[in-house]
Image 1 (cartoon, rainbow, N blue to C red):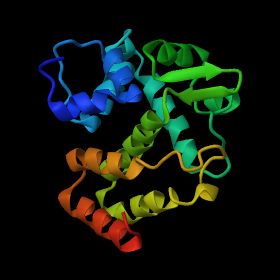
Image 2 (cartoon, rainbow, N blue to C red):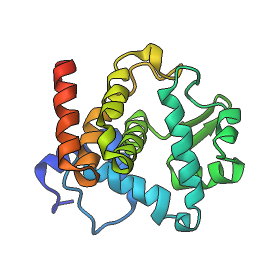
Image 3 (tube, rainbow, N blue to C red):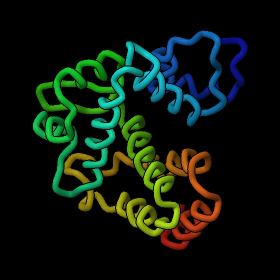
Image 4 (tube, one colour):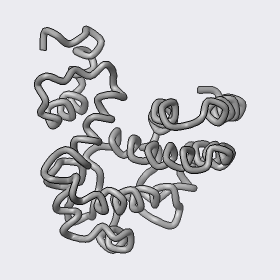
Length: 193
């Protein structure tokens, strides 16, 4: 802990980030910032731990389910029927719950914490940008919809306040500079951030 930079120590005083860091279980790894911590947590729970490298279809199904929060016809936490429809079956949910990224309850399925849900949504948008860099307008439209809870899954409300920042961090690595610049300019033109 003495090796951690002061700003990272401050971050780890926040219970959610302390919990994510604890769950990574890598004493020699030092996060450089909040985004690196969430990214490593995501990789740890969806690839590195408990043999998840052999179950990447689970992650694809989780991405498919995560995409539903961007639809006004769905709800969050997700119902078990919605999870099944996304091909996230009971065995996959059990594996992802065992790694710590999912929770299952009588109310349905949810991601560990809203902050991680933001990351999951941002990952999807960044992947969309990487697939079709010229379609920056579609990404901007999705980002703008996050400000209107009526366009999102019931129960999401204003839970997705960090998606834009997470998306920018992820897209800076995956997207083309021109597409990313176009997205930033369009978002700034749309509203004050």
